[in-house]
Amino acid sequence: MSDTPKIVEMQVIPVAGYDSMLLNIAGAHHCYFTRILLVLKDNAGHTGVGEAPATGVVLKILTDAIPHIVGQEIGIMNQLVSDLHKRDLEENRQPKPVLPGFRPWDLERHHNAVAVLETALLDLMGQFLNQPVAQLLGPGKQRDEVPVLGYLFYIADRQKTDLEYQDGKRQEGQHPWYHLRHQEAMSHDKVVQLAEAAQDKYGFKDFKLKGGVLAGEVEIETVRALKKRFPQARITVDPNASWSLDQAISLCKDMHGILSYVEDPCGAEQGFSGRETLAEFKRATGLPVATNMIANDWRQMSHALQLNAIDIPLADPHYWSMRGANIIGTLCNAWGLTLGCHSNNHFDVSLAMLAHLGAAAPGEITPFDTHWIWQEGQHLTKNPLQIKDGKLALNELPGLGVELDMDAVGIAHQRYNNLRHKDRDDAIAMQYLIRGWAFDGKRATLVR
Ligand SMILES: O=C(O)[C@H](O)[C@@H](O)[C@H](O)[C@@H](O)C(=O)O
Ligand SMILES: [Mg+2]
Image (cartoon, rainbow, N blue to C red; front, side, top):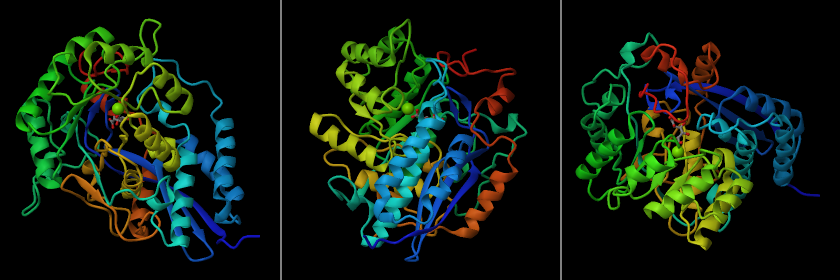
């Protein structure tokens, strides 16, 4: 009936890379982070790729899907994606964690498998049509460059662990960022110094501080220090809903002109959902609110919008899917909201996913989150996109515009295979700092 290329091979390749000891509400990043690459080959000689966070569940869903995908034409990509969606729902039938006991990324896992399949298919389709993925999304390509923000963390002292963190040894002629990103940064000054180095290297105009680590008052002081140093920057803080509503209001109410928006300042408490408390926060402070915690699927989004709880949905293509996130962008543009994008540690395939999503978003967007600066240098593709002037510029290639470097992929896959803990668990490294430390979504990591 149709004439589109057939998929002749599907590979699911888990990979691992190095990370710094970045702190968040769930503990400290381990020295390794893990991702999954989905690689599809078709009989036109094209290779399509997608990247997603690595978990055992997603690996299983994708591996089980191989016989359903291989042999199919890319022309029925919508059906392939929705069939996987149905199987994904069945796999994910176990009850969701009850608020507030979930780590920020627990709810993000759902649909990672669907998203990564859709991405690899879009990559193949783009190459078949000789168009970038951004042209296949919603209104098509709207811009060539996508603004991204400098994503800052407090960094713990890796030397208090015996884990294999990189030391970032200073090297002649190398930018100071590559050293600083591995060193302890727990004070306002140290975080400002990180921001300066990141700004110098990548040209960021805007910054986000990951909070939920120190007392809220201290984190707000770090935000003030950043704003003092970068008066023109849009600055946000993200305590991952660890502040109570009252605390969030009192910390932020006088921050107009300093915080441009606040990300998940509070969440579910005392019988009220995170959507309800964010709506109250917004009314009490008048500050715009971003989220990647309480509007992560259509049902949650509908409640969030009915309550007027959010201004900036951080629509991550790794769980909304590229097309789902693009629809959020289209709705944002029509409804007076602003599209942003959430991130976790990632490799350069995900970097291209963010770039195409941003390029196809109509109207104004807020600079996207990306953890790439913590990973940059660990490439899995031959010509990774670069962050310059605080922006990611699309290349001229069709599809996602990435070509895997199979040697690098092989090394990262071996690294994954050697790991004892393959799914993310930030408590492991944290327990070197505080013996017996356990996650509590309502208590800052170091306030124990
Ligand atoms: O430590 C991190 O990398 C972050 O807390 C993420 O896990 C989290 O999903 C974050 O990026 C967020 O915006 O909530
Ligand atoms: Mg967040």
